[in-house]
Image (tube, rainbow, N blue to C red; front, side):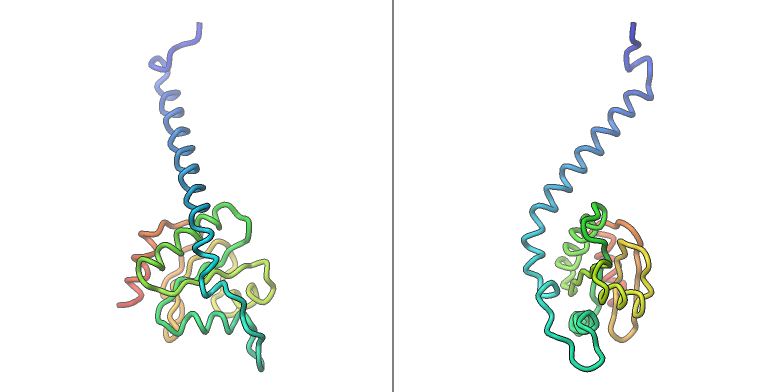
Length: 158
């Protein structure tokens, strides 16, 4: 006879945890599906004009984004599940706070080099709150939700 879950308290908790994780994953995937079309129209994702002089296309993209105050910059690895979640959350936080948003790929050699040289980012995903005058105001390595990112933007504006 198999013992009931009441006889094994750890089993019930395990089942509950799995249900919560599955529900969270499903809700997040729905959020990604809904957010992808909205973020593809982002001006930061628009094609960058060819570089002139010594400045790379990635550097121009970053400079354009930083003109409007503290910006949310995400260093990401394309097709990474956590990286995709970070993009959704960072984009939502930027929208809530009115901060510019820029997503840079570590697979693009120019963007990766610029991330390392300018911001010393070596892990992905990384969420940076960057100010053109003061540099990096806050850096979050790994996943963070939109409330944490929005709070970091508010702190950078002080």
